[in-house]
Image 1 (cartoon, rainbow, N blue to C red):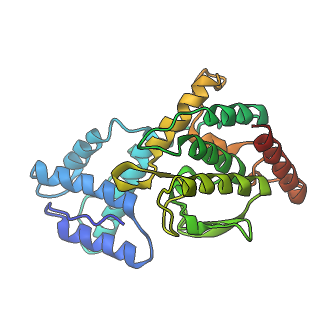
Image 2 (cartoon, rainbow, N blue to C red; image 1 turned 90 degrees about the vertical axis):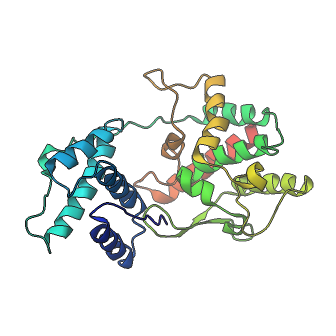
Image 3 (cartoon, rainbow, N blue to C red; image 1 turned 135 degrees about the horizontal axis):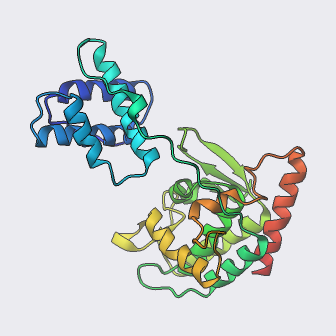
Length: 288
């Protein structure tokens, strides 16, 4: 949770607003960051209050962001202004009709089973180094989990050893995007992949405890991979295997969770869909 110290003339009401949201059970980190950037501008430019001029100046500092991200941040400021108006009826409230439109969602790339097999084979050929002693095994595991379970990249990187239950063949996904936790059943082939990875970690006498990140590297004494660090492992493999979208772009890491056989895709026959998904990943891991 981000603890932000506000410093502008609106610091008191900003702190009260953030505190209220968190008292209602929200983490409110993204909104706090947006409000913090507004507070920084107000303090730096010595604006006595938030008015149209100050708001437009802050919007200019957000110009490098995608339109959808800018809109979300502006809506956070708009919500704050509405909160403030409850006690200050004459305060400024921006017009949301002037905000940028939502950006069009990017169509996900659907990986084929043969592409996953090529990626797993390429991952097995990666070289280790002192900061990433488990690079081949770790990259394989990351691809397998993203492709088969439908978990988000952040959820993958938050996994620890205690979240894997070999006896029940489940993964415990904690504090997800919507602040909920869930148990994911996994196929035997996926469990074997995790087991192989953990066996190599033990053989190399690397840190292992219930709280050790599952997707681990040795930087700064040992920590979870960052999203950028994981991209550095996987994106070169996508280039190496010649996997591109219809527009000639490299697929996103996020696209792995949208493959046509994974467990988050609705189906009229849900049980058959799960069985097909399990057979697909079993074939992929054995072939690789």
